[in-house]
Image (cartoon, rainbow, N blue to C red; front, side, top):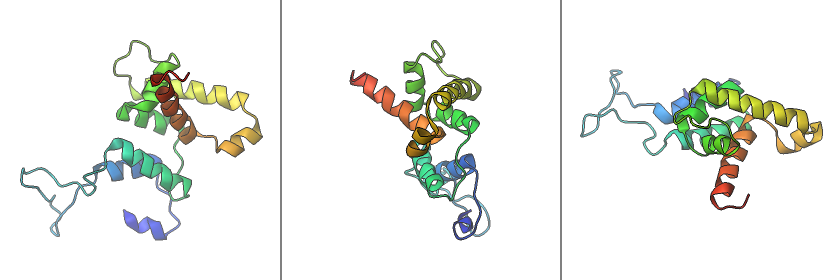
Length: 151
């Protein structure tokens, strides 16, 4: 999976994200390595879903991974269940839905993307590197600002 770094290959955003969050070590016979509790050993044990997203975003900005689509981000935000989802709720989306599906989250993100895309100028979009990474990041920051009653 890491041989792509030296080649002109761009993995999908979700493929790279899943690699970081859930790759397990295998021995020379192809069997999963086990820890003292007989659990499979993760290749990156300190990295969960959120940090996997942040790391994958860095790879995407560096041009080594495809940028996420709205659908990709919908799946990711639904699974991580953190700031992006809180930001959507703060804007009035997904009210009364304790565990929204990736389709529901994708629909909300699509609405926000369409609104911003229609209301920002081409220059503004270029300057802010407009896309799903920016939108998800802004939703997280918006929810944080609401926590501190800054907005």
